[in-house]
Length: 346
Image 1 (cartoon, one colour):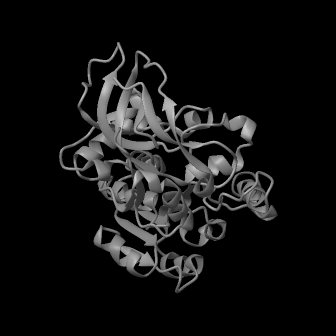
Image 2 (image 1 turned 180 degrees about the vertical axis):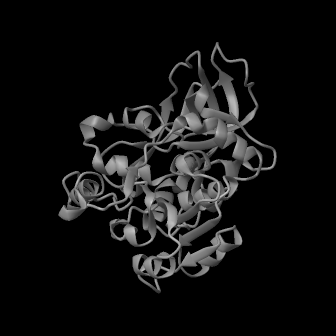
Image 3 (image 1 turned 90 degrees about the horizontal axis):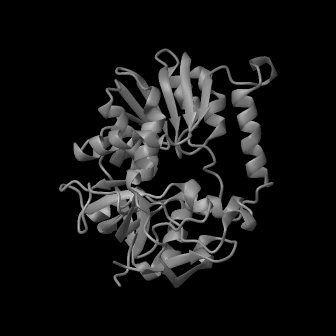
């Protein structure tokens, strides 16, 4: 059983594209309900650099290892676990809140993870594909928690990693229409995956186009995967009076964003208008919710992945020594699917 891992460590404040350091780290003793995973691939998520950007250093318990998502094989299991054996292919994640509190993430050769966040890998998907499915899959399922069969669905940010799987989930749950915003070749790609109609945000004003096309047949739900306040502001023009606008939140946060920056304060103002203010004071008269990840949906995620209804997309995989470059690529915001780092072998 491994006692050390090679890892990328956040040692100081700043952009993960500049501050990651590669080190050997001691692995904590394996808890009775934990699994030690030999990591094959770690997938990067925007939440990694957002936590680094927004949380003061004294709250982040530096140094720590980033990245929630992983795939790999079981190296060892805790004393209370008999459902997984060493050598079993698995995938899963370390929750972001645990990372913020100092628990080591998956950007390492080995990681300790609670059993409840580890799933056996289906044979039809590779480790590379499974490396980044968990967090975005749970996010998509959380967005879709209120979806009913036959609903009309709008996805803002249809080519984002969350948007891609949100369309899969919408189709699996029986949506009658899926419309998504995307541009150029990405719009073609998501239509080939099952989105019915697209809106090219580079060619038209998305909110205006939504009002023009769908005012007479509005949507039941809108899932905002990029956090665009301007599209939410005009939601009464394309969303049913009893419809719901659900958002993943602070997508505009970048590594240089401070906690008291205009972007963060703007997000607070957006929340006030969406949740608190009446319409005569500028509030938006449509139900609104900010996503809070529902980890109880793990069994449903496993079912949809195993059945092939959730189809992971990998944009690019970087070598372990290229982790800084991988974060720079993610922060640039042009990936179509997941950005992975292949773990080094010790």
